[in-house]
Amino acid sequence: MVEYIPLIMFAAACAVLLFGYPVAFSLAGTALIFAAGGIATGVFDTAFLLATPNRLYGLITNQTLIAVPLFVFMGCMLQRSKLAENLLESMAILFRSMKGGLGISVAIVGMLLAASTGIVGATVVTMGLISLPTMLKRGYAPSIATGTICATGTLGQIIPPSIALVLLGDVLSSAYQQAQRNMGIFSPDTVSVGDLFVGAIIPGLCLVGLYVLYIILVATFKPGLIPPKQEQPDDESNQVPLSLFQDLTPPLLLIVVVLGSILSGIATPTEAAGVGAFGAILLAGYRKKLTIEVIRDVCRTTTRVTCMVFLILIGASIFSLVFRGYGGDELIQSLFSDMPGGVFTATLVVMLVIFLLGFILDFIEITFVVVPIVGPVLLSMGLDPVWFGIMIALNLQTSFLTPPFGFSLFYLRGVAPESVATSDIYKGVIPFIVIQLIMLGMLAIWPELATWLPDKIYS
Image (cartoon, rainbow, N blue to C red):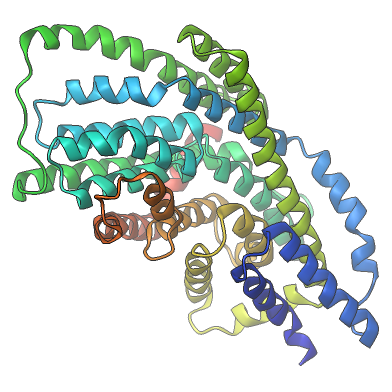
């Protein structure tokens, strides 16, 4: 019975979370209760808890995690600079003569926002407030409009610079080194946040392409759901190039500078995040949106999000120590090794568990709790860490879209007008969930979609 305590502790933590308690305190509290019970019965070694100060010191000296507040600041500042509104207006005019032009515009703007902000909730809410009323007014079916917005809003999960990829990169780096030590490799290879950023580019662009293809197909074969193309007045046509250039160039330049500096090796993700944050300030000033009130609100939001992330990380570190103290690593290794089908079945089970946990946990909790537990075991079985990280990000993105608990659905429901039924939102995301599953299948069959570009750039 004692050997199954790690699984019982994990189930207990999930149960506490379902009661609505804060994540950080749920993880740390559950772990400490189980540790106290183990100490009282003599089945837990207190040396694991004594390692907590060293763990926390490692967190506060981790250079990679500095990128988190910087990217959050960058995203919040760009959101306050009204970037999305101007982009959507210009894109809608540009694609006005195409079938499903406004839907295509929403998909492209959602991609650019994802690459600019890296925050799923902010993108969904922003696009919901700006584009949903416009799409409904133009005659788009509520299901198509809400599905497009939810799906494109979650692109911040996979398209760099994503906060999820920053955190995943840091956790996978530790897991990969531990896996190699377990295999007797004491000069381990490394995996970085930059590797994940590069690996996510092709899957992210493929996903956007599939979204756009779906919108075009619906506009072609089901014109009742999407209004016909609208002719563009001559005077408006002449204004498009200049307007689009003015709205598109600054954010694209910022994205190129941030990602380009990482891809070229000029800057680390943390340094690039600092450049991005400074660039967002300049962009807000250029748009004349940089006021004391804006700076104060952005700093407060950044502080709030950063404190949440690091508090969860502290709780997850305590949970991880107690989990390992009860032999959780050996238990997971044993369970995976005994599974029929080997690494394929083990990976499939982990992906299913992560998908289900995505209904009740945010990506931060899953990254800090689940990945450190299963990561070293799966990576020691031969999985590529970059491919594994991109699969997790895509999997969580799919989970955030899936009714009835998907986070993106809740975000959009909070800003959608009452005339849009919740059933419309649920029905609208189903085709995009199928697209996500197709993309996951493609990545499983062709891992090179995630691994080719990092190998090419960093070889």
